[in-house]
Image (cartoon, rainbow, N blue to C red; front, side, top):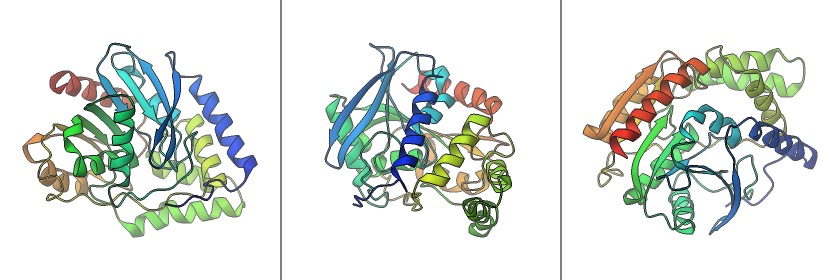
Amino acid sequence: MKKQSIYKSDQGKQLILQQYEQYLQTLPLHITRDYAPTRFGRTHVLRMGKEDGKPLFILQGGNCIHPMTLSWFSPLLKDYKVYAPDTIGHPGFSDETRISAKDDSFALWLSDLLDYYDIERAAFIGPSYGGGIILRLAAFFPERIACSALVSPAGVSIGSKLKMIKEILLPLFLYKAGHSSQPLETLAASLSNGSVQAIDKEMIGLIFTHVSLEQNMPKLTTQKELAGARFPALVVAGEGDIFFPAEKLFPRAAAIFDDLLEWRAYHMGHFPSPAHMEKINTDIESFLIKHY
């Protein structure tokens, strides 16, 4: 576990947490905030939705803030009792301890949160890195997952490293060098297939400037690891996703989930457009009604 600050400065941390609070105000529901103890440190959890609804955990994307992730799934928030933990070691109000996504650490972290809220099993939604965390839980404690919806998930397959260097790492380096704002425009376009929202682009810029980014992706899940996992899984992929393109995601997802897989693919980037999120929320809503 790495206990040093994930932020490059106190000022940068305050800027990001201030943006977190402002983004949170755009969400449509009353939100309760907890600090849940886990073996890795305190976890800040946003709770919302239907008080007597079935429990639904929504995990954030990596190097992201949770209000951004929640805004994508806002149509689903009113029908379930939603728990949205800030990923420990990532931007947000949880402790800054970085834990490994290669072993059972995140599975234990999620299990601690389920235990804290006295939840035996729940449905899970996770985009990107959050999807990879759900797969770590599936590898070690599959009995705690009723069903899962994974949107452009990490932990299944990965795209071209050369393309990522060209379209993500090089613009990121140029942006950090401070020559102009154009590299951020290029970077945001690559992440979203040209459809990033202004508020998200601003947040991306703040995080890339002020956070020591988590660069280690969740472990690629094997068929053997999920041999004992029998829960329905919806996987939504982007054909233009630079990190986890649909063409690479589908064969591995089909192998590890077998007959429990439901699959959707759209012509979108890693960050879905509002139009694509409308379709994805419809997909997830139907999936949850059917399996949860």
